[in-house]
Length: 409
Picture 1 (tube, rainbow, N blue to C red):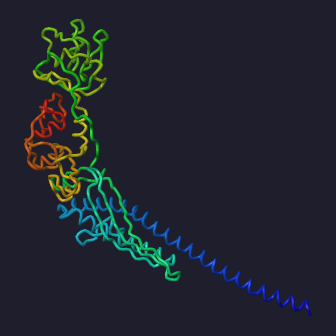
Picture 2 (picture 1 turned 120 degrees about the vertical axis):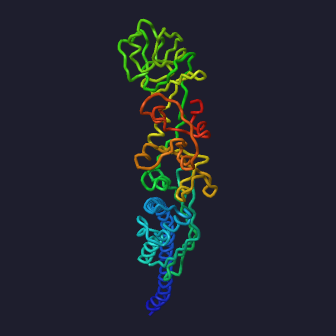
Picture 3 (picture 1 turned 135 degrees about the vertical axis):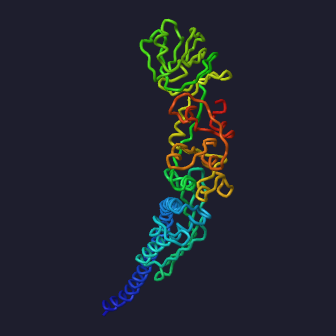
């Protein structure tokens, strides 16, 4: 009887104890489940913010290309670059019409995809754009920024996350077409933006004490007079002295730069002499220009200027229109886009080949040419060079002579 009593007493103690343990284990499991779900919500919001940044980078670039494509085809600039780029990103349309590259991949379609992912995970999601900004980050990059509001919840677990998010992307305009060229050439001439900001566009290497009356340009060859054995009609000889004993070889070169100021009687080739350290200052095969005018008598390196003209390179500008200005067809820099301008050179032979009338009196700086700004020739002596007096097509306005270092030329 006593054993039975003990058994009943033990049961009365153990049963409530197990009930308590079971109850708290259930609560613990619920807490774990809630914690896991809360983390899932947080990670989902974090992933939305990260994906929105990636979306802006991709769609921002596509919007720029789509805008330029529309301008090229229609011949009409944008009325407001900021408004139209926002429209392209948000709706995939330009002035209400679907636009290639963004018509099926825009903020609206992105929201739909994110909403579907949230629903599949058992979440309810709302996303609202609070603000979108498009402007110049610098001369060669466009800043896209979206500020949005995210509200995501799990109705079953009665929890949610509300957060303001910001997505920022800086998109390069490198290799995007410059809209000013088709706008100003009836759509016949195209130019892709390529950045290359030379330290020196024109650099005087050495100055002489005496010079011929004629100029010349060409690639240099550095040879001491005592080592001369053969001439090269395509090269400018850079040497120590125009030696009488080697005159037969020296006259076979295109021109001569000499450290000594001696000039043999009757020497007829273009020359600059009395140029100290010319053999060390001028590099082998460097393209040089001999400017023999009385007040200069300088040897110039114009390779960077030549490259900028021939390759259509762009540089930052304090006066030239920014890329967003160019989308609007502007020929000057506006305060609207943070004063980050661009400029390049027009290639007048290219414009002529497009059967367009060319004004050879104007500056070849792109926006100055289309603003009908008068330019001035610079000297050179080699046929085929863009600033050659035979062709005489490259001219530059007074302001840009100093910018490109050709004010003495």
